[in-house]
Image 1 (cartoon, rainbow, N blue to C red):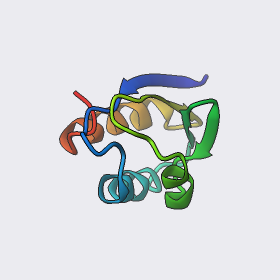
Image 2 (image 1 turned 120 degrees about the vertical axis):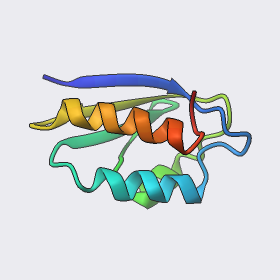
Image 3 (image 1 turned 90 degrees about the vertical axis):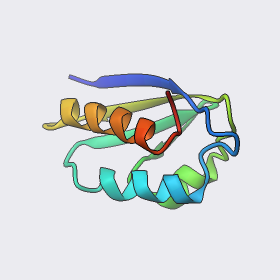
Image 4 (image 1 turned 135 degrees about the vertical axis):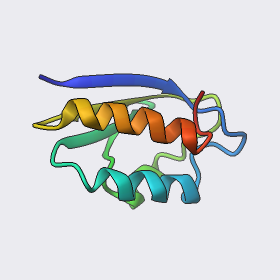
Length: 89
């Protein structure tokens, strides 16, 4: 079953290279397919170039979609990590 979470980016710079790199690196540990959706565009969240290509600004609403054997853990970890990195509240 597919798991989804919607979050709002609060970092004044948006989702820039440093936190995006951390997110991508951590997502590579999971077996599930993980997608990041912004402005009707979907990218693989295990691809730094894909994530950065979205140009996600502050106050953007993004969706993370996980599908696979560890999808629950993905959603839990990604929301926790985004809070730690001050990307979201």
